[in-house]
Structures are given as C-alpha cells and as structure tokens.
Length: 322
Ligand code: CP
Image (cartoon, rainbow, N blue to C red; front, side, top):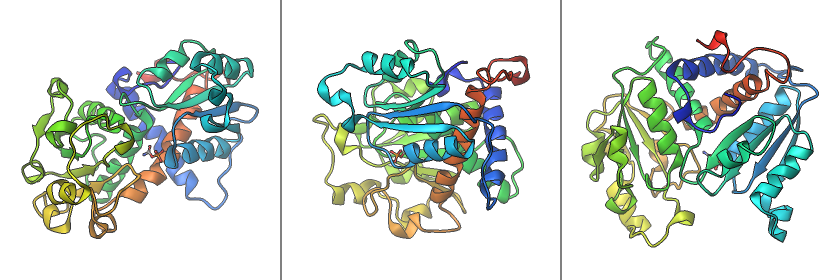
C-alpha cells in the first residue's frame, strides 16, 4: 500500500504489524525527551476540511516527534472558501512536493479521490461516513494494552464481545472499528435508534439491537458514539433527554455488561447525553484518555511506515509485512 485510506484494504497481519510498530512509540512518547530525526527533511501537510481536535493535533505531534516539517491547512482559512475545487486544492499541495498528505473531508470517498491525484502517500483522517482508519487502529491498540494489563497476553481479540452504541448511520468510526475488530477476531453488536441504524449494515456480520439493555448483556467492551447532529438530514431522533434515557451509558446500565467491562469513546463526548460523567471518569473501566495517547503512537507508526519508500527503506507491502 502507498496510502492508508481504509481498514477494509488491510489484511489482519498488516493491522497487527501496525499495532506492534505503534506499541514501540508508546514507550518512546512516555520519555521526557521525545524527539527523533527519522523523518527529518520530509514535509507533511495536514489538510483538514472538517473540524478536529484529537486527529489533527495527534498527527501534528506525531510528525514533529519524528522530526518532519508539519504544515496544517485549515479549509476554513484557505482558498477553498474562494471556490477552489477539491482536486485543484490537491494538485496545489502536490506541486508543493509534500512527502505525505493527511486529509479529513466531509464527503465519503474524497480522500481516496485525492490519493489518485497526488504523488505522495495519503492518509485518511476521516472521510464522511466512510472510514476513519487511524481511529480504529488506536482503539485496537488502547484495548489491547488494557487487556494485557488484565493478564490477557493475546495479540488479537478472539472471543471478545464488543458493543458499539450511538449514531451508527453517520459513523466512520463504527465502520472502521467493525472491520478492524472482526479482523482481530472480536464479535460486534451494534445498537442505535432505528433511524440511526444504516440499512444493509447487517451484511457486515454484526448483531443489531435497538434496545441498549439487550445489547449490553454480557459485553466485554462498550464503545459509545455521539449523535452527529451536524450530519442529520431529517432523521427522527429523540431529544437529548430521551436519548439519554434510552441509550445513555450510566453506572447502573454498565452493570448489565460483563464484570469489569471496558468503556471506550472516540471523542468528542457529549457528557450527560450518550455517556454519564460517572462512567466516562471511571479510572478502572474507561480508557478514553488512553485512546487519545495511543492516537499519537499509531499516527507516528503510520507516518513512519508510509514514508519508508521515500526514505529508501522497505516497508508497506514489502516482504517483511508477510
Ligand atoms: N475521534 C476524533 O476523530 O476526534 P476529532 O474529531 O477531535 O479529531
């Protein structure tokens, strides 16, 4: 692979390789001095056409910790506002001889389209409701690290029951996570109000629920998603109060899951709507800040691997992956 566009394009052994590479950066990032020159001289452009805190900052930190020159392009302050097309914007970034371009865009498929127009590796930082591959990888790394602390030394998630609850219809995080969790052996239950469950999603071999209490029964991991109000297009959704009543993760509800079940959320959270603060801040159960920490490590690994060819090092797609 030259690019990282979707988990659907990765084999199980490639996902495990990425996680193992990222794990090395976790230790690196916990040192007082965390700087390497491995990407020195390379230029990375973060082109974000949608808002972001975690993904943008962690890609920026990742590139800088590896010694690259990192430039952020915020669409709201760019010539996109003057009517420049996505393709012309991509060709402009290409002409500046970037060595990697990280893109977030509101339209599904937009990042793949740009990848076909530029000469350098492209990393998908989230495209519409399609995929958010680095989110799924960081979620897997955070989950694996918590499971290892609990004495589970397995590389993968064979036998694990994961519930993903929230606005599945608009969620690229859910789609990437279903693919990544399945590749690593977990089973996935989805829970959403009927209007926020995409038709045909059962083809992804997931168990579907509309009642949260049923979905939670005996689950090992509970991943909560926010309502993406900015993407709603006439779907009927309950009021925030009613949503919390039906789908909010409360301490009482969490008792329906397996003892010690792990709680995850990709952020941003809407506390008091899909998750109570009393759950989000449970140090022994919630790994939400760990997910953020793993995000930097995963993005360092992705930038390292995808720029290896430019640096004359074998990597993605080469024999060492197999
Ligand atoms: N999880 C996630 O993608 O967060 P941001 O939108 O803040 O990047």
